[in-house]
Length: 307
Length: 310
Figure 1 (cartoon, rainbow over the protein chains, first blue to last red):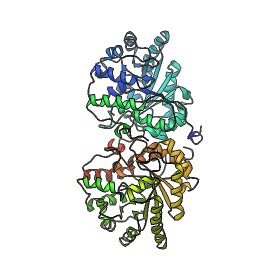
Figure 2: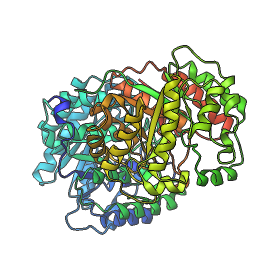
Figure 3: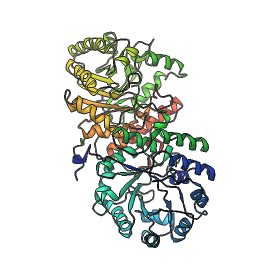
Figure 4: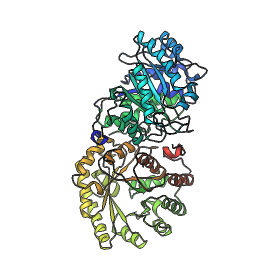
């Protein structure tokens, strides 16, 4: 699949996975009141988004921002045809999530051994065993599981990550039963060059229609990286309203790519998403006011001067 | 990466926003600071040491309209010209051209528009009338073997007219090219373009002007500059305009960014294995310098991330 052949061939439809309420808020300095989180998710539920990652069932010792996971999941007004996946790092988290009403979960692996050890206190292989428990239990209950692979284009500790390692971890999660694998450029260092090489490798093991990209915009590369992924046949993109969530590895820098900016690009290319950009901008305005911060979205900043 | 070019020339223009537009004069008159001549010269000298091949130095427009560029002659005379670096200057008309040559200019640029309304509101004449002015400049420049670069603004949209037909962009680009401009820079003046509109516009323009005579000048107001540049590269364009630290805001979207940051463009190109000859770290230094001098933060995400490259 030479990229020159695929250039300017894009999917007709791209699914946006909105990670603002979880990945975004988890990485914000301020702890957000439960009511604000619920209101944000409810606003997002009215935008046309198909998937809104609601919260994370991790120990509140590790992630105090997500301590109210049960109240959030129980408090939101679920829109029909919208999925509300939650992170479940282990079986305990999974069981708590299901008890709170979760109907989709996600597990979070890494392509970097060092990142895995420093962040979830176990090796990649050990984490896979934990996830296998979650996935098997979820299968019995017909609960779909999404898999994440972090550090897909680089690691803050190890630096370069071999595309073959990303492919190996993605394949493992896929074969264990994850319906979709989201490949994350955790520190935003990727470029169309590294995105292309990584996806070329991963696609030998996992079909394109089971892949998503989760690009961080720390170096401003998220949109060209997403464009590259689309040209290679990926049609699921993770993003966060208002670009919520900073980068813990580059103080003051941005993290998640903004949903608004992604939508602007996709719609400008004639790609359907089903999402109403103006309503996402409203939700972004709401959460930024609540957080007393400015949006990271350039589109929101330009205040809708679209033509 | 398929047919993406292996080398990309950078045309750096940190004063690109500064043109002789009445609205800009009004806007600038509200600005507290006019950048001191010495600071401009120091910035250009720093940029001259980064490997950049082209650094747009100043603009020979009337200081009534653009007071920021009133020191054009001192700037052009004050810089230390690096070998193998071009220092084009804007020359909106014959008078400006003659002043520029007298000050030592060896390359000039003319600035047209694909939008009739934008042309009238900003340089007080129609597109056709502007072409007559530029023709004078180009013909005189030819006699003196001075290359002329042509710009086409509003290539992907106009703040007044909205949508701009790709055929109009092609028509204006063709005119400038046939008159003798060696390169035509197509500008997304308000940053509204996307890979979709960039593709359609370039497809049209490339029927009239060869790809190797084209450049793209993308604004990042809606965050679309880098994907737009990537699209252009994939279509065979290999010249990209950008501004160190993403200097220059957008007068049509208060508080928004304008020019794409040179640092962010370089990061992308180098990550793709594309040669530019430019040292990113040195551009970051130049950006730090000018941002300190202007008491402002950089618009470059790469500079902000402070070189945590792998």
